[in-house]
Amino acid sequence: MQNLKRNINIGFRVNEDEAFYLKKHMEEAGWNNLRQFVMHQVVRGKIVKFEPQEFAELSRLLRTVSNNVNQIAARANTYGRVYTAELDYIKEQQRRLWEKLDALLKAVAKAQEVDYAQ
Image 1: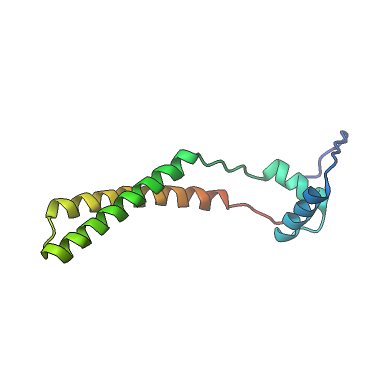
Image 2 (image 1 turned 180 degrees about the horizontal axis):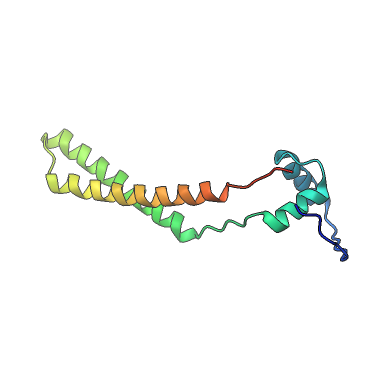
């Protein structure tokens, strides 16, 4: 971090739990100076926000695919055959599920690109 002229003092109080987690996160990130860690997080840290509907859509797609696979397996065991249209539907649902999951994983990976160098 640049050597800036710092003429404003900002202070805040924390409770025991907050102090514990602050110290824990600082140590996990490899910092040993609380002020530097806090400054780094404030100036260069990232805020990651995921919308609950993204996870709800993933869950819905996963349930749909799982239910359809179970139905097809039961039909195949009972009648010895499976319809191509059903398999195509499952393939499409799986494709949509993987697209959503891939986008979510890319967002998480991007959010983790944090330089913790002191």
